[in-house]
Amino acid sequence: MTTVFVPPGPRGHPVLGSIREIQRDNVSAFMHAFRHHGDIVNFRGPLRINLLAHPDHVQHVLRDQHKHYPRPRKVQGCLSTIVGDGLVAAEGGSWLRSRRLTQPAFHRDILRRFGETFTRTTSGMLDDWERRRGQGRPLDIKSEMMHLSLANLARALFKSDLTDAIARIEPAVQGALSFTHRRMTSPVDPLRIPSKARGRFRDALGTINSVLYPMIVARRREGGEDDLVSMLIDAKDPGSGEAFTDEQIRDEVSGFFVAGHETVSTALTWTWYLLSLNPESRRRVQDEVDRTLSGRVPTVDDLPKLAYTTMVLQEAMRLYPPIFVYMRCAARDDEIGGYRVPAGRWVVVCPYVTHRHPEFWDNPEGFEPERFTTENSEGRHRMAYLPFGAGPRKCIGDSFAMLQMPLVVAMVAQRFRLDLVEGQRVFPEPAISLRPRDPMWMWLRPVEEGSR
Ligand code: HEM
Image (cartoon, rainbow, N blue to C red; front, side):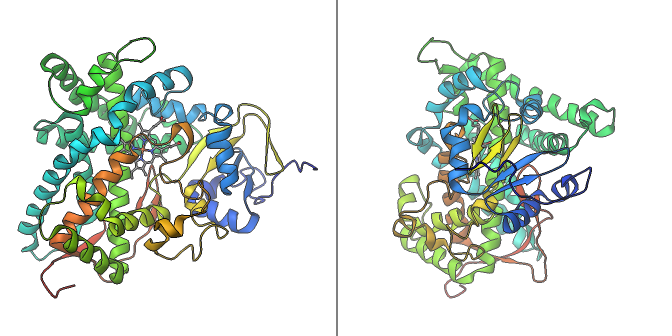
């Protein structure tokens, strides 16, 4: 076989290559490039990257050859400013140690205990919606889902009254994440330049520390609670018997806020958007919820029966994968799909593109939750659908999310129908997650017999 050295790709600007298009809207730039150039695309310019769209190539990088494809140093460095050497940013031996110590706390059987935490928080939100409905104004669902997912995460981590902590940590996590996004996408690191934004970023880190640290120390002193932080305090490395220090728990917990807050809220927000555009699917969710629950609060035991609701969430994450790029860097020369990938080249997996690959998905732009039935999923390439990533660095919180989100959707559907405010235009914004750019205004309609 002959090796073609450079994969095809856009010509771009003679000096800047495609950097401006990528900075403006990387998801659209990647989708456009895939449509024009195929499964592996070379972007020229100062940011030399190869986009991989084909599931075989994704598998090569994320799973089969993962040791030779660590995260780029720049990405790792930006993340570690927030999460230290925690799981989200660590590489090599310290990543493996973190993963071994945290993994047991995220086992599905352990997470089942948080079902009631999730339903209690969701009930509180719905009671509040009931009160606000009388005001005759639509609701910004994006911000409602943000508050909800943060409250659910914080309560699973610390199981105590956290109203005050949540109010402080939410803007701090948001601020830290947007500045980190700017750092990752700017040619010159804004952390090196004195500015108000840098000052706010440092304040946000200070707030995250000042909220989390005392709570971890108190939890270690008092002990006893049935929550994720207590499990991390008790965790021991099976090989060395070593445990986490308080600083390391702080790093892990801030990583969970970075990775597990906006991702969940974004997935839920897109789900409401898509259901509002697809009334037949929304009716099926409501029928399933009524049939399964007959008006009672769901428990984790109901989840297998909420199969259609779960498929709706899967389909929402196919069309709008909350994490829409996984960055890696070739540690040595390699060959992918007949093309040479030199050491040092950034390699990008974009699930937004792979999830729309026409060889693996019929009607890729259409909203069709039924594609996730067992029958319809049979024979599909394992790497054609990867909202939670793949390989050893696959999301540790996937079960956490897939337990929480169907419970939330079922509970909302029991009480309300959400209708997108007419004439509203919705644009995906590829920031840290692929979120709607603007507030998402929706009308709340109470679900009564015959109102579906
Ligand atoms: C819909 C919700 C979620 C989505 C779509 C999602 C997606 C992802 C993806 C794609 C990765 C891998 C990124 C890569 O390979 O570069 C990842 C990693 C991670 N996620 Fe999630 N995530 C979600 C929820 C959560 C939750 C709820 C938590 C924690 C409570 C969490 C914690 C983590 C952590 C710690 C990592 C790093 C794992 C490692 O590097 O070993 N995620 N997530």
